[in-house]
Image (cartoon, rainbow, N blue to C red; front, side, top):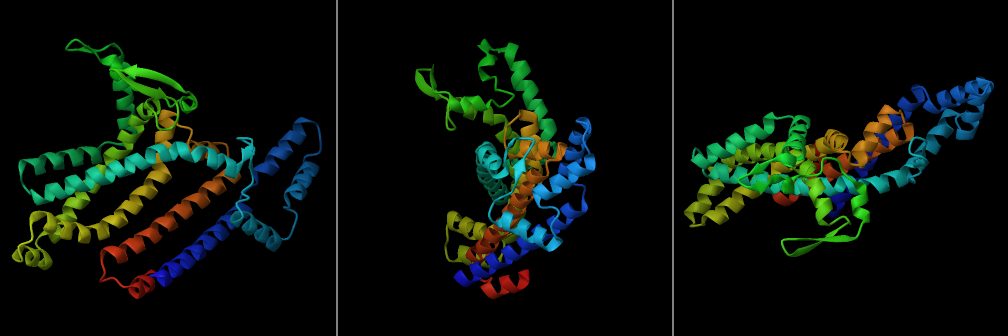
Length: 355
């Protein structure tokens, strides 16, 4: 097992090196935003633009031979010296360290909710096939799959921020259920307390009432499509193995429904783990950008969007490296999960099959 993990890790490092090399080639072939800015500033100040570009190249080491630039680039990548963001006026690594907690605080609960609710409903739906509860669960799943995340987010914003502000239902003022639309990062820096129904709650900090309240909408939006997809996949794979020979044998030996369900779930989790990895990559690649743009969350998704808009090359490069690393780490965990969940898959087969 240790040798298998070591081989997979080495393969991941090789893939990361190839990706970084291709990224360097693309950067070399594309226009340098720093050169353009240096030329523009020189022209505005009445100075020689060509000399400004030459000074910029010398300062950044761009006048050196290609192999020296490539070696310097690789050393900087592996030592986490990813450059300086002029747009944010901050070191790229420091920028990422400041922003990743804002993204992680809604990604983690939404992922857990997606897995627990999706797999749980899918398993229950499969074991109660063609029952009324199966039809209800199927309807909920198709509803979740059919609505776009950005549209659902806007609808939730309209309901909670606009309608609940003036709505009185059965004598109850619904404004108490009004949720914040835009994320306020200053909430985590306060230390006030409020009392609701005799319970004293702390306002301020990451794990407090106000912060949880303003994260509810992002978590709901991300979880909706995710749990719906997981439910459909879990139902399909559970039905596939429900009448397998090992299930019939377990039932013939007198295994109860919980034991049978556990046997089915362990086998079904093998393909489901692959789907989960791709879902997480999809959330990191596009979901965070959409969610943080709509709800103004100052996380990595917002940084990604603004860096592409402003052509902030060091930040774009850093986001690319993080995305590749997350993908490689996810696939490594997936391979390990395969071997653990299905002992029939041996280390040699998994290594050879992956190249």
